[in-house]
Every structure is written in C-alpha cells, then in structure tokens.
Image 1 (cartoon, one colour):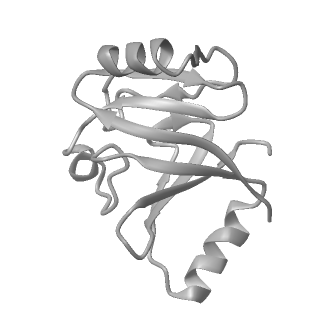
Image 2 (cartoon, helix red, strand yellow; image 1 turned 90 degrees about the horizontal axis):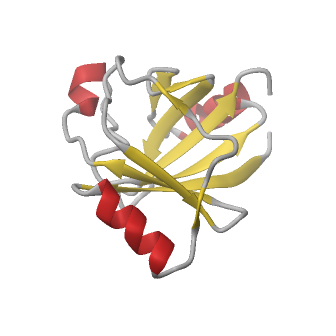
Length: 136
C-alpha cells in the first residue's frame, strides 16, 4: 500500500478570485490532465478550478458546509478544505485506519466518478483524503 500526495483542496466563497490569485501570483497553470469527473448530482454541485505546479494539483472548490449533511457523511471535505493522497490499495489503508482506531467517512464515488474516496481527521482536525482510482 503506497501513498502519494495527489492534491491540496482549498475551499472558498469565490473560486474565480482564488483561481486568478494562484495563477497570477504564484504562476500555477490551469490543470487539464487527469482531472476528476465531478458527480454534481450526488451531494456537491459547487464550482471547482484546477491548477498545478506541474507535479501537484490544487483543487480550488466552492465552499459547501451542507455537503456532508446531503450525503450522510460526518466528514465534509468541502467545508474548509483537505489534503489528498492517492493509494494503490484503499482496502488495506482502511484496514490500517481501523487497526489504529481512526474513524473515517467512506464517500465511495459520491463526489468523483472513478475515485473511491475516504476522509478522516488528523489530531488537530485537519481533513485528509485518501483515494484509489478505479482499476488502479
């Protein structure tokens, strides 16, 4: 079971302003490759801009404090943002969390088609995503 940093998600009330900031001030480029296919009818229909430094993506997502309620999940990844790791064995990672007594929300593919996502909190309440891409 390998983990690799995949993206950082920041939540905002103004996606266009954040996109402009990260592109014009930090020189990040619009990400066009390997983007998630958002499932806008399954609980989160917000706008998202995707930028990258060429290695790590940033997902600039419209803040939605109600997404967790609409999907029935305790952890809401678009309430305040999260960091995300991609794994090659999500089942093994979930077993690892369970063995460590770490609760998580299993979103399945409710937010992104083809990505099985789980979300949990670190000791300070920061949200962490771990996902596996179908077929990986």
